[in-house]
Image (tube, rainbow, N blue to C red; front, side, top):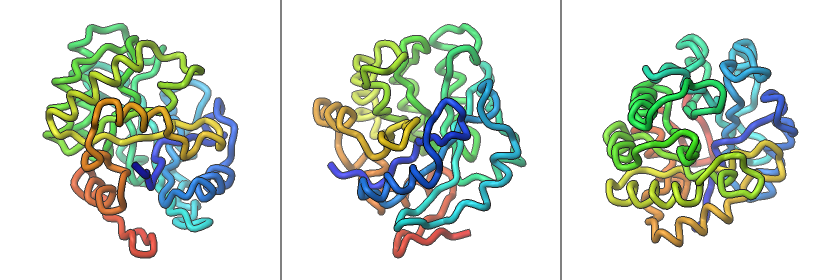
Length: 251
């Protein structure tokens, strides 16, 4: 399976990542991607960005080195209501957001409370994907989650970095199998991303692709497996219209 986009990547603006926007786009071109999403961490995570950073993403080019650039953010799910850490005023500047749990931000909770918080976060009109829902430190009901994502036309992420031997996340491979099986039963979208914190990782999906093959997961449910699927997903999920004929963005 070929993937045309990597939509969860970080730059030095996240402060614990190590590459610039230009370095990321250059690597995406070398990896023969068509679309790159830059999703630096939102301010709810200590020592990352601030609101001014996201207000000024308008200066990013829409196309560079033949790569279409999307303006995103990885927001934090902050509490049991599914609140995220960017205001509507900031979200208006962005194309899309990934909503994720991170250690030290979300209060200790049960799997039911965590699952309900994710589902509540999906209701935000800019949230199109739930990031790395594979960490045993944040146990989730994958059947309930897959059903809700299907209902709301959202995607659940298959995160390449979760399968790396460098990850701090726990139980990821086993959890990813459960996640993929639930999504296959419910015909729920999956989005495969690198979650790169250095340009060298952009477009590297080998472990994630192995998991898709292992679970016999259909390419028709992988958001970024074709331009038509990616365009259709964004249109249905968050009303973002992308024209992949020449990689032009509809403002």
